[in-house]
Length: 88
Image (cartoon, rainbow, N blue to C red; front, top):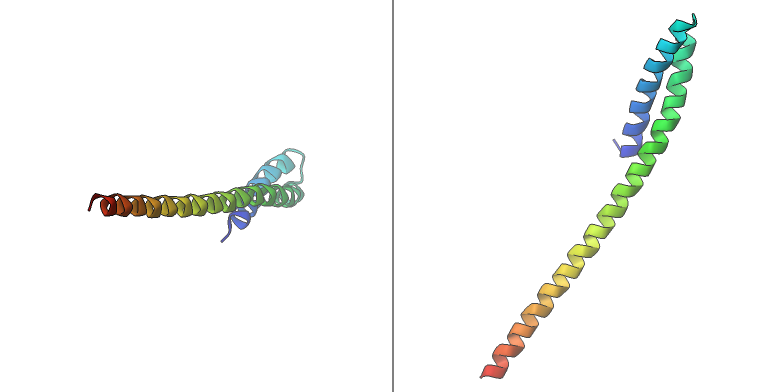
């Protein structure tokens, strides 16, 4: 399940619960739960989408960091090899 889907599910459940409570206070808990669930679903999906976008961006950045570190390590080994070559 993606982060977007998790956010939508949590939003729908939370919205339905809050909507049901508010709906009960005005005499229509079913309608309140339905409206709250729909609004929560939309809001949760938006939040989940933003979080998923951040996760993707962080994964891309980590891949770039790993690539850069591998290049640094390669250059370090090459420098060490050249130093040893110059000693003999």
